Image 1: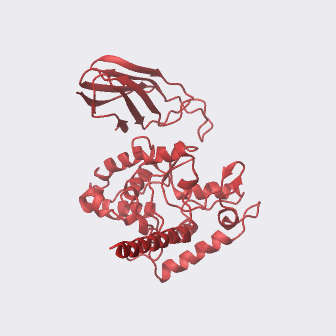
Image 2: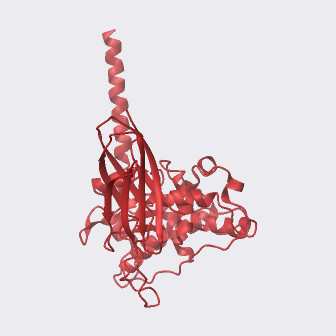
Image 3: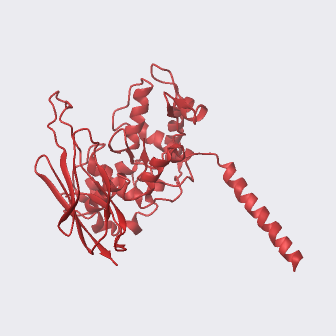
Length: 106
Length: 258
């Protein structure tokens, strides 16, 4: 069960710059903190976030242990054609989730 | 005609100044008003407020069957948007047939134990907080309306006693900071008036959703007092008094706080 909140416009004018904001529930455990038993809690972070618009990559970022839990990402893209934006988060412990948003370009 | 307009104008002036006077009479401030603009915007935007992730999780848990009865919250209560509207404004309250008040978290656990025949969730468990946030979110914007009764009033009086009692190595009471010095700074951080308007809150320092109990424990540790055990009735008594102090203020759940 993954929990994601995405804020993207449903429609855009051709050529318009749109802002896409995404928030995801994730502990972003650094791998440096000791747990209650004194042992280090294994690292569990999102390593990479990518966004594609109709298959073409429009944004990508590498994440590090210094990024807080439940990371919030905001970026801009030019709306050239109607289609689907796919947001992908991948990381430690086989974490891989996707969220799709449709944007209609007029 | 002009005279009628003049009279109407005067009435309007009086009406608006009366409204201003009403607002001015209530000088209480939610912690929201003392936050920076960036944090206020974060709380107001439902897709930027990290607390909303937990509300979303809560809505999934609401519909998920659990326990020996294999029943979900929705099987009895239906849609939370109607059945849970305003509920959080009335807690802590006394469940039917019980002799002591419980907070919303305690009520959810009671429901789990009695109706779903499921294990009680430990305090500050993520799922418990998510359910609490989902239920309290249904009352967002509604004024806090605490219930009354002989038992509740007795616990509330106990809560006020705790609020005013000096304790800990620093020998401070809640009232010394949150009544006498609210609005001033403590180690560079604004002291709020301690109105529990947005619990469970997403605290950036915690990087997670947390309960009022957790916040109270923070304060107790801060004044170097011994925090009560997690199931102590003192928390509920104090919460009863705090909700009475915040009576009428709108609920903000899930609030974001630094």
